Image 1 (tube, rainbow, N blue to C red):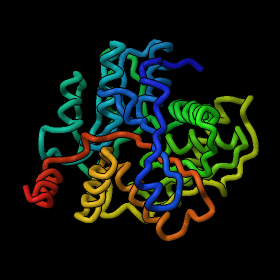
Image 2: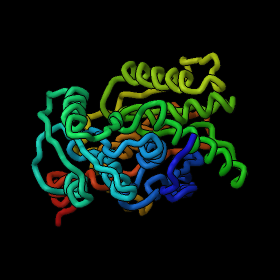
Image 3: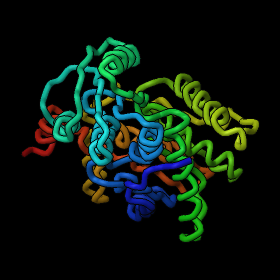
Length: 326
């Protein structure tokens, strides 16, 4: 399967020395926030497949969707600008400030369409597709997060990249931990692990939906991968899909003062900034679970930083300013 080659890969794996000493575990972080600036995070690994497919099959216009501050939408706008495809973003929510990813979407030349918080993103994309098709456009739809069988190949590749790095580092990771927000990143890692038969635990920390909903979505993506590639089809043990939905907090893109305090403390102790929508919730969940003894059977633990610094809204920054006494 063909892909673009625009992400800065392989992304490094770093040991969190102070945290490892504190918790008595070897805790590592894979810096997928280093894949690039405009395309930073996990989204570009999936878009390398989605956008290349669109180009090879003669599409001239891409439509995708997400929340107002969607990392995926911003990355799609950037990649489309790189390869000269028209980009339309269907963003759901209320616009409060011209900032963050919403600002960057416009900076990168995307056509932005706002729909109300309760509207169907899929219906809005389909309606827009019909409108553009009537204008003579060849339109390719990318689902939220590029989380489908096509995009998930980016994280099958990432799994193989991690295995290669394990050999270079002479280490074996007992688990790979990550935020899960649409399912594609998790599905790719899980699929890669199952194909390799290395029996690592792939543990996803939900940032919005329930564990049951995400297990259903991951299962669907895995079966769609099989459908697209008969050579890789095999029996699957879906009981090894591990999703933790205990750290969603107040909801997607929202952060309590307790969560913000955790992000501040980690930034000051490690020099690494977690975002409040994805990696922050997931990493806080991981550390809490380790402290509760849930990882006592593991020695080497890997967390994937999937990017998203633009998620700190003006409201969050003002709260952090007050918390810091500035």
